[in-house]
Image (tube, rainbow, N blue to C red; front, side):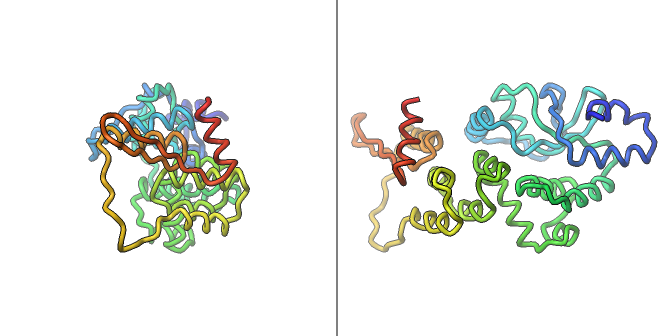
Length: 286
């Protein structure tokens, strides 16, 4: 039975049928029109960084919404947002007509928790699916990392490591879903704070098929050594800083703008290998 048919029959179904519907909905992603989703009026967060939203919107145009929203069904064609308002706002900016979402029923809290815990035990889940389910249990069932670990039979540190995957850029999350990189690779990448460096190392891992150990060594090599004799770095003007960050994000490489005043300067793009250089040239020529 399709999800639309499942939802259309839910109002007239028996308690047993509703329980079965909750189990089905707990791991089924539906594409819901953006215009049918209303924001929860009790959402405590009311301010969102406009620049960060625009950056996320640009990413969604390329990669789509990887982490589904969670919504509550109100009527056949109306839903209320439970979690994911930032993704919803960015999707609207990106011009997406529909977004992937998990659909909740009105009073399914206890059944949902049981269904999600059961889903975690499935062997065919990829790391991102596991991380999303952990996050849903925390957000929707009001669990701590420790109590969640108790319910799914995992250490607290294991739960935290999986949740950390959701902070990775969309293209890295997608690579995890596609099994092009492993959890070990992702852990090495999580240790990189600079987004441009993170993406550059990710490209090398994929193009060269690097092992986890090689990825860890490469990540360490990108870290600037700490010295006591470093000269103070002069901060770029805001306009130049923004250009530098956008170029780094677009190219997936570390980019440095050097301003020499009077509108003159240099753009330095770092690459880690011939393959990485060719990737950059393809992007620039394209």
